[in-house]
Structures are given as C-alpha cells and as structure tokens.
Length: 338
Image (cartoon, rainbow, N blue to C red; front, side, top):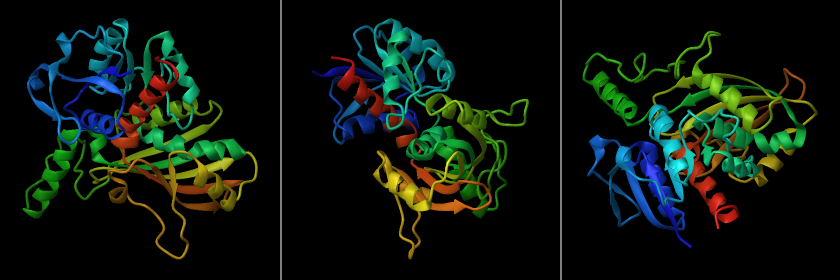
C-alpha cells in the first residue's frame, strides 16, 4: 500500500531535505505534494534524481485524504496549519517547536523512545525534537540504559543552517565581505557570524538562558528521563551544516570508557569513532550529508564521580530534522497505519 504524503515548508532547507530523504529511503508513497507559502507557489522542488514537484499554496490546500504530513514551515505557520491537517485525518509529524512540550503530543526520536509514537492518536500530531536535542539523546540513550545519568553539561557548536537558508546566505556574504574589506552587517544573527562564535541562539529568558538552551533541557527530560539534570550553552559558529556538541555526563553508578564504547558501538543510529593512534574524531564538515550521529573522544572525567566526556557530531538537516521525521513516518506505516 502506498501512502499520500504532504511536505509543508517544501522550499526551505529542511523541507528540501525531507523530500530528498523520502526518495532516498524509498518511502512507500503513491502521491507526494509540496506545500509552501503563497509567494512560492509555482516554484519547483526536486524529489529524487529525476522528478520535480510543483509547489502548491499551503493556505488553500485541502488535507482531506492525506495520510501523513511532514511539516517544517516555522512555529507560527505550524500553529495554524498542523491542527487543520490533523483535523482532516492526516498524521502530522511537526518539525517546529510549537507542539513539542504539549503533554498530548509525543516527542520522538526513534532510536530512543519509539513506543511514544503510539501517543499520536490523541491529537494526530507527533513532534520532532530540536536538532541539538536529537543528537544529544541518541548518544545518551545507550549510556543511560547502562549506568543511569544524573547530570549532563553540554556546549553546542551549531551550524548556521539551523537558522535557515537566509542564515546560510548571511554567513556566505559576510565571509566574502571580510576579504573584500566590507563591514559585516548582521541581519539574521545578533552579531557578525563570519570568523566568529555567538553564544546566543533564540531569545534570552529571565534566568539568563536562551530558549535553545531551555529546549535542550526540557526536551531531554521529556524524551529520555525527567530525572536527568541538563545544563546547556548553545553557540552559533561559522559552519554551514553540522552541529557539534561537547558533552559531559555524570552517572549514578561506575562506568568505564571501555563499557561506554562497547554499548555505543552497538547502539542504533550511532557511528562510534575510536582509533587511539590516529586523529579519531569527526568534524561537522565530515558529517554533512551523513545519517549517523558520530560519537568520538569518549574519555573519563576524573573531576567528578562516575564521569565521562564525549564529542558528538551530526548533520542537523538530516538526523537533526529531515531523517528523524522520515524515520518516525516509517515507524508509523510499519506499526500503526495499515
């Protein structure tokens, strides 16, 4: 049986990646439509190597008869159209922040909490977590099963593509401008991003944290374990694709480097890099276009009891967004939509 699928936000960086991923993984779809705002109507987007889809107007689209909607249009647009699609009978996998902390909406990373998908029946909506949270919990899950995690301190180094195509253009134009002696004029970011690092992603909150840092904390608790304490510092860096995270973990019980590597090596969705005699780590440039969450530099932290540190890298447009959403859809059709 083939399914009728709609991709919302199809002209954006994540939407285009969703279409690519559906094609690459040969998702069982008989019909796929691309939806975006009125200004994009009539544009064409690639679907697979030899097919293009003409973009239709999201505001006018009738979702009746659609089985699955993969949505990544921005939180405000999603707040309006995701419930509309769900009411029409589709199951919506929403990649925005709007529904993630709704208690009636499951927040899912298939390698971590696939059973939560069953909760879609309450509102016909499943939330895709924040990109930085996804790679964090994929790396933490097998370790938590082994020794139970008490506390996580994480610093992120996040690519500009997490802020969309305009952000990628800003990095490109500022970088070129530096070499031409042109002043950088920030628009998308609060400060110059070229040759810089900005410890500011999303809005600041009353406690001094940013919304991105708050998301990592509350989403990790919802997905993995509400008892885990998480403290994050999220930094935007001049990289186009690929988020990196330096993660420090404190466990309830002893865990050795060797035990950690063993469970990480066998865990789904993870590529463990461990070659002590070489430069055995992965950087954002190397993870771009790849599906796994790459874990390297697993080592003991001697400053706390039962502590480990890891370096975790993933393509934020693939596993951090599009791939995770498509994997959820694959579970849906395999286990629930018959």
